Amino acid sequence: MAEPRVKLFSNTFMAAAFALGNFALLLLLMWTVNAEYGPEWKKYQRRYYQLLAERTEDPAMKQRILSTPLAIKQVWTPKLDIIDRCMTCHLGASNPLMSDVPQPFGVHPDFDQHAFSEIGCAVCHEGQGFATTVHAAHVMEELDERFGPFDEQHSGWSRPLLPLEYTQASCQKCHNVMEAPVPGAEHLNRGWKLVEENGCRTCHYIVDGGAKQAPELSMAGTTFFNNSGYSEMYHHERFGYLKESLRCPQANLSPAAAEACPDPPPPAPPVSASAEGDDHGAPVAAPLVAMPTFAFDDDELRDVVIFLLSLKEPSVPWPQKSFAEAAEGNGRPGPSDVPVWVGKRGAELVQAAGCIACHNLDGPIRTLGPSLWDIGARKDKAYIRESILEPDKVIAEGDPPYVPGVMHATLDSGGFYQHVTLEALESIVEYLAGLNGGG
Image (cartoon, rainbow, N blue to C red):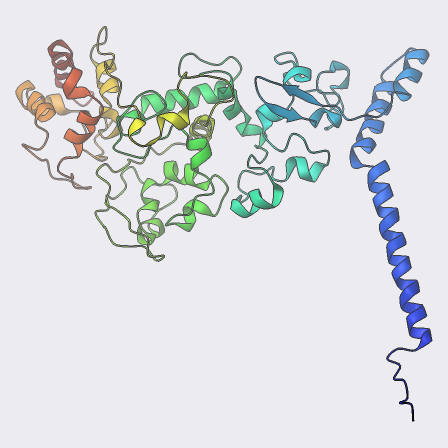
């Protein structure tokens, strides 16, 4: 006797499932066709040509504009090696007739400074230049959004769009602000000037000179974002490490130090000598040189961050030795062989030696070292000279306490003891002896 057939689904159910599947496939086909033949960029091009036609008096020219074929606009230059399709949507970037329309149709503010048809947009603004949708091209427009390895892996690129106020960081790709001011890049120029004036190269090596007591900054724009670290204060934002390193330097020493960061920061941060591990088990070594708090205002903070963001592997060949080669193991270059002491006297020599990185010359407040603003009224030239040549012979008490070896190691790593001339040393002593507290 034949076994009865067991029917799992009725004919009605199978027919409904088949119909539903076909309907889903039809919707998918319609979506695919629409995405292929009606992409987002075509909408922007049509609107641009409409706006341009409205600003044209000649009827024949107006008709030609409205009948312009829609097409992808692509820029590629071998020197920069960047594929750029941004002007597919930003067609009005170089057209002064589009000065009164919103983006993406409007003219670029400095449209006459660069030939966008030759270099494109991504070279300055970053972003995914070969994208043809707003989301894929921009992804992240806000500096304070987090950007990490997952975003890079998911999006397939590693240079999120820079906010407008930080785009001058890209000028360093083709210009060298450390050789001469960059025309039109006032924020980048000021950032480099602040780095020089505050003696950052007393402790940090930057591209072609400086000491190695603190992390090298030659590729800060590439290295110091996305990094994992000890403090949420540093790493919850896309470029948080750079901003918080300037705003509250001690925050990266330990979780406790990060919690102690006030807003605004005090003139003198505490020096941590802790070598204990953090909450994640990562060792936190006690630094030989602690970074002072410079108390930058918001504008100064932005400009210094712009300069630091500009320090990345360049797109054009300057300097002759790439940053990556300069940072490789034992191949890292040392301090400048002959620091420029010739032709400088007094305040210039004190700045060149990096004294202002740790000593206050403008008031009595102690920073990492004692204030020197009235050193001439308190000490004689012999004491000042001895303090420079043998910093640990007499240690002045104060808060924060002086860490033995710091000053000698800092000056030594910058080449001071090896290259300073007797004449330059005496000029420094003479200048400091003349500081009497403004009296």
